[in-house]
Length: 154
Length: 287
Image (cartoon, rainbow over all chains, first blue to last red; front, side, top):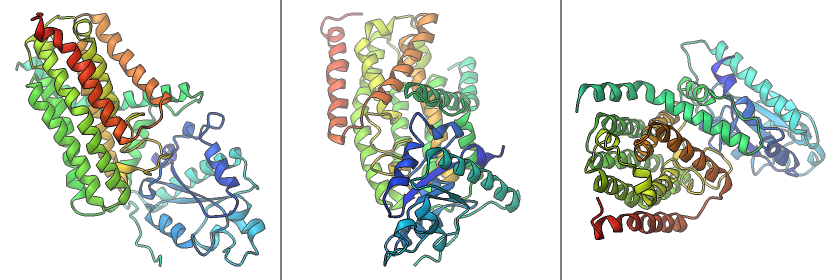
């Protein structure tokens, strides 16, 4: 197991919708699911995070916020989009201000299905994303370590 | 100073982080068990540190790295001189200096969370400082020594003579190690109002340095707890262990307090437990 895989620190952002998936993300930290088993720490600071967990359908208001968080994270990073809204906008897809899916705003690596997503599924998504991080680190090469990319966020 | 102490002080430089990291790992495991969770692997803090140092993140400004590095350097030096047998009363100011550098580093980021975290850290320092100095004064009053090995070798049952100071010092440990209910400046968990507070905008290796300083700190702080129990080999092992366990228990069973309460509690404990314990020694002229 690589360095990154053993200690994937998370940051989570709820980009609108009903908050159901957001609560399920928090449930992952509770004794029953215990995300810390995998070395996960939920941090509030994007510069300390390796994996971004996003729930919700993203609207015009929180799009720049989401981009901002993503761009502050160091490379390699991974994004897990959680729930039906994060995939397509879900039941909110037709709303006037809804973007309809996280992938329309930032690149997504893992989609976790469900409305609301189950904590088991979310943990599975996190573990897959951690594996992806390790792969990316290898692809980036040993000498070249990731830096914070200067964002094109408006 | 003699050479055996020099070797111990040098050993602290090398083994300090290993022991500190292990203490942190046990802490996380025990915390998890207290909450009915399985918890991370015992060596998780080392995995975390290795990962932090493998990250590369541009600092917010040029000042941030020197400040964080100074924080670590003075934390290491504090422990080094404690175990070398230097004057504790002077060394304690180095400990404060180390804390001040971290606060300055947090201020330098310009992050609003960092700023509030730094403000609160200063208040917490204000809250624990009187008790730390009282502890050293009390240790001197009883053992007539201001250095680590002099106190450890005095053979005086300090924990029994100075229970108030022991309780007070354990109290300052909770503040110094930023544990609940006094984890108001930053937290190891994200679910707090300040996001990361003091360590906001410090990522990758920079956070690694802060973490490393924290490990060095916890080793010499528990070393000072050991002083209270140094009169008996069994007590010397059990005493600090029990204090360590109780601090984790308190961390898990209390909610974060406001800064007013932290300040009041810090000073009240210094006044009641600290001064209260010392009064008989000064008034009645006890040995």
